[in-house]
Each structure stands twice: as structure tokens, then as C-alpha cells.
Image (cartoon, helix red, strand yellow):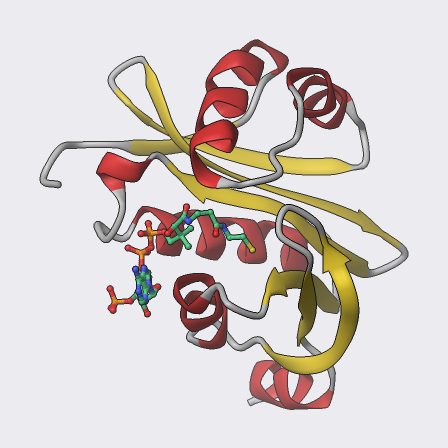
Length: 157
Ligand SMILES: CC(C)(COP(=O)(O)OP(=O)(O)OC[C@H]1O[C@@H](n2cnc3c(N)ncnc32)[C@H](O)[C@@H]1OP(=O)(O)O)[C@@H](O)C(=O)NCCC(=O)NCCS
């Protein structure tokens, strides 16, 4: 989709838009109050992509002691395959790493080929498996990690 959009920090006022995309994107979505709680948290780094005044995507991470976890990332269905998730993920990684994060983890459904391809293209690799981690439907999670020695040496070059 060839429409202009930009990335900015997420605000609590984005709760309804984020919850709506969440409901369109996941079989077991975070409820609205869960979205609101996360967007209110001081340990969370969150960005949205916005087209005009409409929020079309979001990426949310939490970090502590140099380690971050990407909690959530989704793009409104009609805006997919336009590079929005790529731009959000780059912004999130850059912000976390500039803030001192060394390792970034996330869980992804084993069957989620789109998300796995996205993360692999951004330096994530398999770091483990969490059996029956998801519900609706029950499915294993793949634990992905970005960071560690490979990325430390890339940065040093
Ligand atoms: C996964 C998701 C965030 C990708 O968003 P997007 O804006 O469409 O992604 P991008 O356009 O930036 O695509 C980046 C890369 O991801 C991969 N990708 C994205 N959608 C894909 C699809 N449907 N099938 C296969 N690969 C896909 C491709 O490698 C793509 O690169 P390419 O376009 O050069 O081939 C989006 O499909 C989504 O919101 N899905 C539902 C929620 C979700 O699964 N979130 C991740 C939870 S861990």
C-alpha cells in the first residue's frame, strides 16, 4: 500500500487503536486493559506507525539490565507487506541498543512464517523452544535472540 506513514513513540491515548489491531492480528489478543497497562509502563519502549491520524501498526518491548524482550508487534492487515514492520523493528532495535541493551529476545509461534522471516532478517536466531506456550490454538513458541558475541563483534568493526 503506497500511502505515507511515520513512526512516533506510542502514547496511552493509542490504547484503543492498538487494541483494535491486536484483535485483528492474533487469535488470543491482549485485552484493551492489558494494552493500556503496557503502554503506561515505564519499563516499556513502544512505537506506533501512523498514517495521517490513524495508527496502523505498533511495536512494544520491555527491558531491564541490558536485556530486552519484544512483547508485541503487529501491522493492520491492509497495510502489510509495505515495510511497516521492518521500519518499526529497526527503530525499536536501534532505540533499545542505544539505551544499552545488548540482547533482545522474543517468542514467536512456530507456524508464524511471516514474523519468523522478518526477525531472521534482522539478526535474530533460534535460541530455544517453549513447549505449548501459546493457547487458542495451543502451539510451541520459538525463542529467538538477537545479540551476543556475533553482534558485539559486528559493532566493534
Ligand atoms: C508479521 C507482520 C508484523 C509483518 O508486517 P509487515 O509490515 O507486513 O512486514 P514487512 O512488510 O516489513 O515485511 C518484512 C519481511 O517479513 C517477511 N514477511 C512479511 N509478511 C510475510 C508473509 N505474509 N509471508 C512471508 N514472509 C513475510 C518477509 O521476509 C518480508 O520481507 P520482504 O517483503 O522483503 O519479502 C504482520 O504480518 C503482522 O502484523 N502479522 C500478525 C501479527 C504477528 O504475527 N506479529 C508478530 C508476532 S511475534
